[in-house]
Image 1: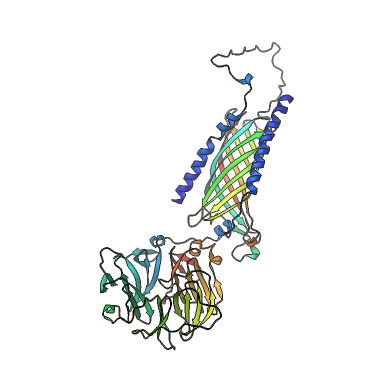
Image 2: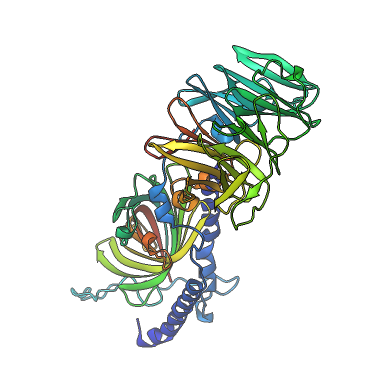
Length: 347
Length: 238
């Protein structure tokens, strides 16, 4: 190569290279980093293999244990667990499931075009209708073998039998959001609407109990869920506030998880983990675990890397199975089970 | 479905960048003296008879490449996750200093297109666009798209070329809804068998070092380490 040619081509090549270098550095300096994430390689290193079944593809609203078998309400169908698999039981559009005396019952609404009314059906081989109603409704297990059914017409029926709810006299015109039973208080059951607390003996309904806030923190939002640890009642509001009470009337603010809470299926529950009592509060963005004194012990930030889909899921219900204390979270992103080791398995 | 989208995305990138060498060659200036006259046949230059005294025993060695020689390389191969290095693992209960990556990421695929130009017969610099993908335990795609500049030194032996290179630039790192743009360094070595003056085929081995630095959550800062083993085709032109 001649010196002349070298001198001619060198500036051209260098110009190209310098231009490319400048463009590269300008692009690099204009880039942003992963502001909201916890770290890509960190997330990957923590990701747990999740069990995937058909139920993982639907929103799951409720879970209930019957005998030693777990049933779930997902995608408006009732599912039965069989080993690692889940089988849809069909039968139409179910809106609630409850357990009574070792039998699964479901409330079917007339969203199913084949139904003109609401029906309570019992699972016995197939579905058998045990009661029907002129309206749609919402069936709530309020504990100790009692159930509350709010019909769309506004009437409330409370009974310890699921086969004759339609025959019981309406005890009011209120829409029940949730209920629980507790000992040592004025009433054996406490029920909530979106704005009031009621007492019940399992058959009748009291007048609204005045909500007295003993704390300086004002209540915000409506009532979303009620649960108890045997001696204390816990109220969770739609804004994520937690109040406790020993009499159903005087309430003390404990803490707030700072996230919205769903009202439909009981998004908060008292649970026992390794002998320690907690509240697990499902929100629109994952769940929070709270000690009974109000200290938050787990939050979505802590498990987002391992279970990102759980951390961002709307949690409809928190349920602890009586037989083995497994904790289930029914969520928008499928059903999750907490195992003894504290890990979550997506069903 | 997500895997199909990823393959489609990579295919589109490869097709798009496949036009790069033609665009580059079109940009090359041609002097009037180098252009063939339109509609006319060029006379074949006369072949000279060998000198009566024969060719000299010691011929001057000519380098194959020189200033202005250009190379276009296309790679496709396997992407092997090795490990993640967490230097601040002592502040993070969830991780160890070295976490295996291969169990958390599947064997993946990679591809790249690069263009370079020689400054000397043995030294070239250029730019490269690459891409890789692999899958997390739950099927999410982790994609790395480095855009780098490279420098390479060429070792030659007979019909074989052995370029040793170092790339530096930035990488677009993505998994699920997380996106990180940061630096990347990729040292590598290749071996090519030159089929003719223009084409060489061979294998490349590249080590991807991908820092992911966070100043506000330094305990999660990490360095991804990967190996790329790929088949390469290299085109030489001026």
